[in-house]
Image (tube, rainbow, N blue to C red):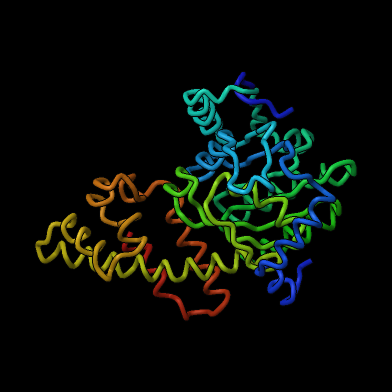
Length: 338
């Protein structure tokens, strides 16, 4: 499917965790990365997964707004998108055309990840719903990269997947295509954050060089890029964040349900909570009560819970039980409440 819109023309230890989290390492990474990619360079980007989050993130890449750091910015020369659902690709194209993003051409290789890899992207960004989907995409594409030694591709997985999956995929990429790399970079901020380009990226990365390379790309989709350590650490931090959010959402669900049973207008209750000590992301941005969410124009409950919210809880519960069985069974209550 083609359109005249856009054209695609090791695990490290604690020492790496500490260095990637320090300002000194960021300065060092800039010096190291200059050997691989000069600042303000033009790059080719492939984006796989145009769901509720991915579609908005890909649109922000198509907008290609200049980064905040003029000394380390990139220009997206070619953008190629892919999704198994052709309707998602057509939706992306329509939205991009509406904004007049017709500075180049967009090519979508529907159901053809091999062709996407063969197009030679500098970055492959994925936003996928399950661990299995992430594995299938990376495994398919890295096979084609293994035979190419004339360029380096960095996988950036923004999906919410397990820590073991992230580490497995990092090892797969670096062993199959040693010139390439894989970074786990799950996000926080929901669909609104993806739309407004205010996401937080929790990054697990193998080297300061890779961190320096991917940062300007991530900054086009979010407001914060936080290095968390070596491969898998981004997914680990995301897991911990999900655990806290599950407890937070559980409390808001109970409070909204209690208020309604006592005859309180849910919009009034939410308004009070959002200027009081109960104020939090689950009350203010993703309120579980449909009437409140609809009034705010934000939240999965406003859309009958379509999208990734249930998947978010399922992955959280699955990973938490692997870490400490039976200790977090209450997180599952969030599924029933929602």
